[in-house]
Structure formats: structure tokens, C-alpha cells
Length: 196
Image (cartoon, rainbow, N blue to C red; front, side):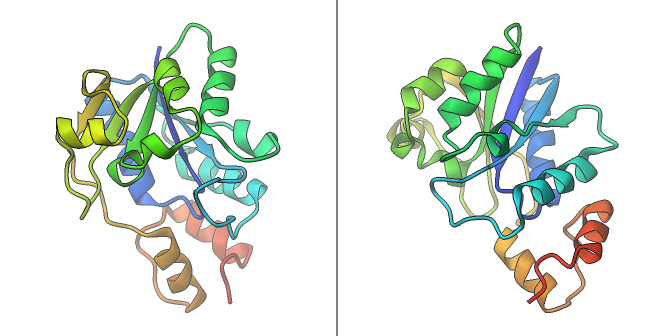
């Protein structure tokens, strides 16, 4: 199977994440995408919601979509959530599958600064999904980011411009939210997540 791997803090998971997964499925002809909530992301501040809450929000968001699944591989593992470790573990769990790392261009342009980027490239092909307001990369910008254009699938598709931090602020202020799956919105309200 051709399996995409889409990581993130998912704090909370929103319609932009789901659109990126769907775009990658279409562009790279993937059979499914595994969403991997980060345990301890090395490039970001710690998540507001805890690992169990973020895993549950992803489960709720994808419950009706058979092409998506969730993995707790990073939240189970201690220490920083390095993509190379995650891909090695997923390769061990799914030895017959071909892995594709799904990245927004905003994250992909930092690829060369990652832990073991050459190992990431060895374990998975990279699918770069264009992001609103971050442009679409050309071969030169892919190379500058540490990606091999020949091994990178470019996916130029419109996806919603949604910021997790802006969502959390809006939830804290009690503003109406349209960017979340309904089940996730209910979970956040029930558990009073992101309330100030």
C-alpha cells in the first residue's frame, strides 16, 4: 500500500489538516494517510492539550473517513518527536508499505535543518502540499530546503488557511468556530479545552 504520514501537534486538529491529507491522497495516489500527533515536537512549543486529548480529537475527526487513520507512535515514545524515528517505527510496523511523508511547504522549507534529513528521505518519499500565503516551491527552492526534486511530489491544491494558535485564541474568547469537525468542536466544549 501507498501510505502517507502526516504529523503535527493537532492542537486541535482542524479542517486544514484534513484538506492537506485529502490533497496528498489525490496527488500522490495514496491508499491512506496516517495522522501522527506529535509527542514532544522539537521545533515548536509544547501542545496545550495533552497527548490523550489530541489523539482523541484526531480519532473523532477521522471517524467517518476510511482513508485516514491515527497512530500513537509519537505520543507513546518518550523524548523529542523526530520524524526519522517515527518513520523507522512505522516501517517496522508496516514492512510491505511504501511511505510518503506529507508536509506543508511552510514545514518543508525547513527540512534541511531537521534531525537526520537524509534518513527521512531514505525511509519515505516526500509530498509537499502548497499552503495558503507560502507560495509554491520550484526545483531550486526544493533543493535549497534539502529536498530532492526527483523524489518529491508537489501537490499544488487550495487548502484552507487555518492557524491552530488563532483557533485556540478564538475558542478561549468564546467566538464561533467554523474550522473544526463537529465532533472535535463538541469534544473541546465538553472538556473545556483552550478556555482561558
